[in-house]
Each structure stands twice: as structure tokens, then as C-alpha cells.
Image (cartoon, rainbow, N blue to C red):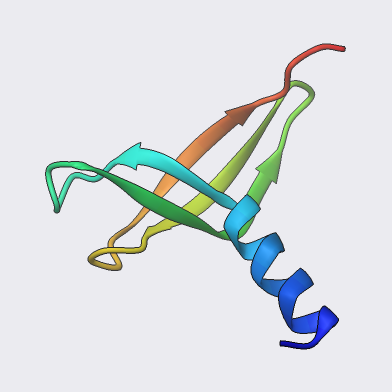
Length: 65
């Protein structure tokens, strides 16, 4: 595997979150599809379930340093 391929796959893995899926009825990995809106202390993301493909919004809260 080339370095750029490995970095791409690593970025994809880092851009997933374990979230409850309304369709699967279980916690599954959801991948970030798109940033919908940025706020002062949060980001609204469009997430896709990696098991069934269902999409949903998710608020990612920024943690203060």
C-alpha cells in the first residue's frame, strides 16, 4: 500500500464516529459526509451509517483547550 493510500484510509477512519442508527437500531460507525454548518462551539455534520447507508445530521461540540 502506498503512503498516500494509507494516509487517505487513516483520515477516513478518523472521520468516523460510533453513533446510534435509527434504521439499524444499533450503534454503528458513521462516516462524515459533509460539513453543513460551523458555529462558534459546534459543527453540524451530515453523517452516513457505514452499515446501511442511512444519513443523518450530527452536532460535533468543540471542547475548549
